[in-house]
Length: 276
Image 1 (cartoon, rainbow, N blue to C red):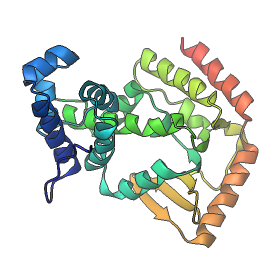
Image 2 (image 1 turned 180 degrees about the horizontal axis):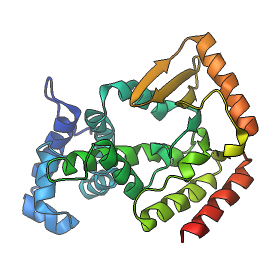
Image 3 (image 1 turned 30 degrees about the vertical axis):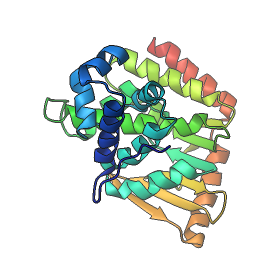
């Protein structure tokens, strides 16, 4: 039985909070009891129920098990995370979540491959200042949403993903040796997944068509492929067949110039040793 609790005009985040409260009350538990039995802080649980905070997806997985609610809370969390994603990214996120094949060229480590620490450092930098009491919670919500996207890499079946990283992405570490080392280790780990091919485009490849933007090409199980081009905080979703084909040809040229997946893994491992 679906315990989803709907209210007209309600945001996904508020709907998730309302359902959390409903499940707790149905179980006859106080917030204090729930906190004690799940080891989550009472004030944190209260903010989740009030729709004021987006948790990590693992919290919803824990609570789904606690309430024996199947994957209800996880499904609602996937809707709720859209509330903390800027409008221009929502259509892209929806397509990314359902793509069967995805190719990326990135000038920086993409969110799909970031560690939590690296994502937090990057998002703090994009906010224009260091994390403060005023913006810290917003950043943590964005980190949670970004980490939640990565579940698609572990689905069964998982999409076929190819990521080409410009060498510059690997030569620009974030502050903190441990954070950067963890990020490099993460790239090696993801590159070993059977559904993922990770390549590095070295500086020696010279100039190419994709030097000034990130590119993602996505294929759904049905329908035509689409391209998403992003640069300087501006993103555009493109479905014109001729333009998408042109981007694909540019991607093919970049892929031909990149190191092989085996060479790329060795390259990243060398950087990791230097970092350590």
